[in-house]
Image (cartoon, one colour):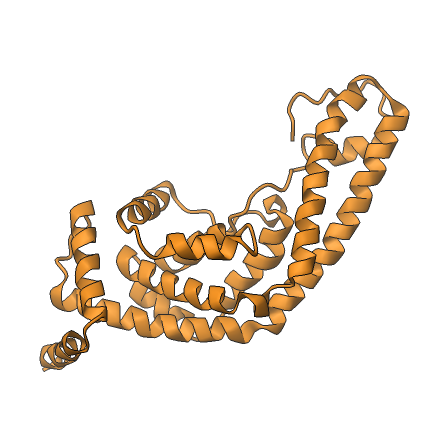
Length: 273
């Protein structure tokens, strides 16, 4: 919402427009479903800076089909890493974030295996990163099954029109141009109805393809278990940037070697003894 929108002394001719652009009418601009603590955001940003391969490519691939995919990847990480994930106010989310990102994240967090995966990832950035990468990879590979692409494209176009219309509102209100105000209000209302209708189609498509998410969580569980075993066996337990690089190198070396994976299995059995 533009704070420079004047409060009309007589808004009897523009109640609809004023209601839509009033300061207490929160504009939907947030693409993140979860709200991380500052320290969690710093850890995620540092980790992305340290690990150059993995999520960058997946973000780019996913964003070609849905603009909010990069935000979804961060939300998945936070849902696994954070001790107590906190949700943003749904009223602040863009339509695609609310009707695509949020249902995907809900499907992940309501999965039968979610708590098991989270138990391995919670507080461990590297394991959370690896699990997130697997989930994102699985989703990207089957994104067309989750997406109602036509509806998403229309919603994104309509939201762009909404922003343009809102940008015209201050001048119309300032000049008390009744015809212009009514035209903007009518277009905003019509767009909002279309966005709501199409967004529900987007959310329905996600719900109908929940099996994609369940398969992704199953793969992520295997990856998280392997990463946990590897770091427990050979990781140094340090959380410094240098240690993150070292631990990721160890992890990826083990992932590419069947012999090292077998060694970890035996190490695990000896530790149990």
